[in-house]
Image 1 (cartoon, rainbow, N blue to C red):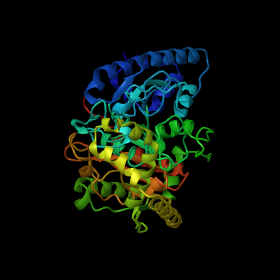
Image 2: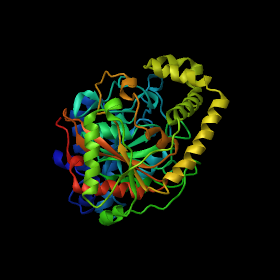
Image 3: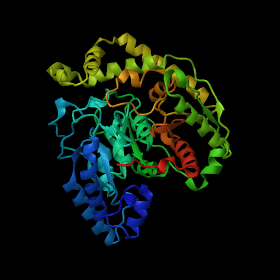
Image 4: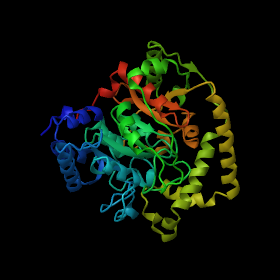
Length: 463
């Protein structure tokens, strides 16, 4: 079997070895599957392990590469997918009891693109039920944090964050409507990319909020996220919200490029809403950028009720998406009582309120366009707190603060979360780097600059 050190290696390192034929895709898949068998039960990170499929795909990749048919940097690379991506022939449970037997007889668009690139699917990863809810709200049990098994990996892409952090996959697919990539990336100490709304097709994924749902990537480094994103991005006729836009990164010249970007930062009230240790780590991160030729400036955001606008839009759209569940009466099988209430209560949002919030959204977009006339990048904390106990109440986890979080998701802005330290309990702390629409290279190169001068992203939990 391959050493654990290699299972924690960045995707690009694995790809180089596979291309050079010094690493067997079959042995790599077998080694990941062996680690999954040993470690995954502690975490509840996997809903379904697709071992037979993985070995078939790995064998095919190995035959093709040995024959000189190398498809690219994801050929033979094992990954996992959040269990709201449809995979033909396997259950897609959406983390919820009413959907435990659901089999969608088609692959999601992202799965199809990865299959075409020769990637190897190891399994479907745990998520909060219907992409929301507290740690306990998952049909397969709470997904635990590899850094402390008594703490939460985050939601709703918690299985994706935990699997990457624990060395069970080389990368993972996740989604975000609000927080769902940034939070597990922060809590688990991995790198997570949430692209601009419409950059990656959502065809074949669970719909929660049509105007805010986004597909993204969790991996070890910003470069790894860029590699996967480059393959997944682009227009898809099955998702009419997708758009084409150029994407070119220059990681070898990141320092020079980032030093030319205008960078602002949002200073949060960590004493009231978060943890002072997170605030100190953020301040040290700003100093790190300053020491490498970048001069972030404190900034203020336009004054809007971002939280109320986002919550109202999500409530109305998810009530529409899950109307069949409510009408069937199976909504009573949802574990979290607050979640049941949200699905029912969303039907009480009036058209007037929904449209009022959508109008407010256009004003927010207008004023943020003015913000981005002065700034290319905005820095903030991915989460104001570190991973909470597994029995924490969702309202205690997301109690307030993080003033930009609702705004960036309303506007579909690209962002990446990267590790930037640990608290006294040895739990990861995340830095969030937000960019202008369709400017993924800016956020990824800024993240790469930070990762090239720090080693937080190289740390790994002891399991």
